[in-house]
Image (tube, rainbow, N blue to C red; front, side, top):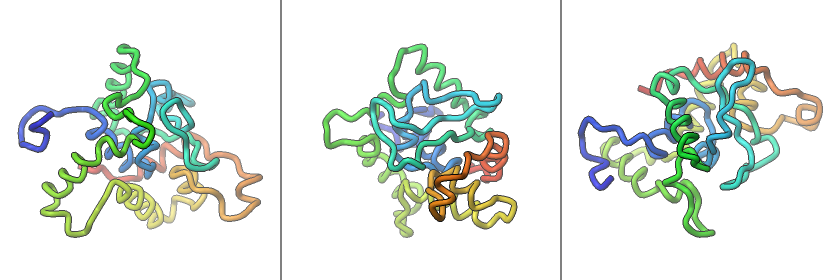
Length: 191
């Protein structure tokens, strides 16, 4: 771990690796992805997804933040479901146990902040645009806004935003997993 930012051929597949990729392929908030538990990864209508909801390690921001997010195909290719299975076999209560807070004032994001900030500075030539973890959320939302085939409701359902008015919030139903999966598939590969 002390040589994490040096070039090499070993990938440390932990929260610092998976978290940004999960956020980039969903527009989810930092704590939403870093605080996932193995039991939050489920299959709905045959589609692998993760359930963002309150769990023993963290809550969700708002009522509309609780949602199911289809897992992007690239995450599956990279071995995310294998990581989930390994955490299940270990009996882990978190997908990223190294990020569990060690005191009441810490969050999952606090546990990766130093290494995440250092990676940005090293990889982005000093990070002149001052990008941060939240930039993945902005990226996903902005990209989907540019696609006429993705409705505002589908985008809101993916990123956990509430409806535009009381009718949206009271009378809407969640977008189907097959439609949500096609929305997630429209996010371009990060690398």
